[in-house]
Amino acid sequence: MVPSGSYIPLFLFFLSSSASTTLTGFVSIDCANQTFHDPLASENLNSLFKSLVSRSSTTNFYKTTSGENNQSISGFYQCHFDLSKINCSRCITELMHSIQKMCKTNTLAARVQLNGC
Image 1: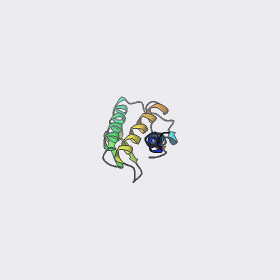
Image 2 (image 1 turned 90 degrees about the vertical axis):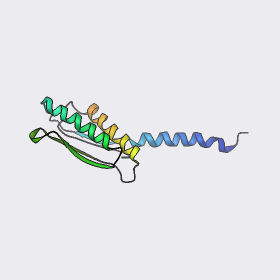
Image 3 (image 1 turned 60 degrees about the vertical axis):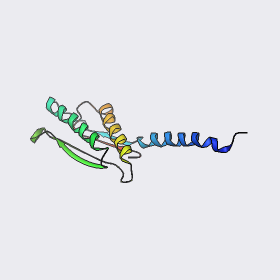
Image 4 (image 1 turned 180 degrees about the vertical axis):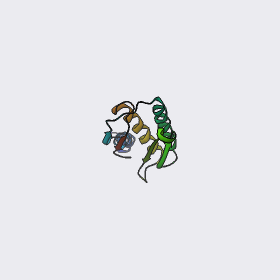
């Protein structure tokens, strides 16, 4: 007979795996039908995404703008206050990939909400 304690690591593995899956599960995603056509706007969007992802490992809220004047693009994220910085970063990285995958290229606006974020 195997001692019952030997099952604990396996249980924790599934618990951890399940928690990771539900963390980035979709609640909603909304993409604007309008797109921008200026190549500079596309560069600004990529710069904005990089900035948001890089800050997500240090803070659970961040708002920034990329570009200047009428070419500027603004964005922000807010993770749950009790979410670890590692999981916040995981969420924001997933958000950026999801927007690029699920919305039209160069979508003018998008809003995404993930289950655990």
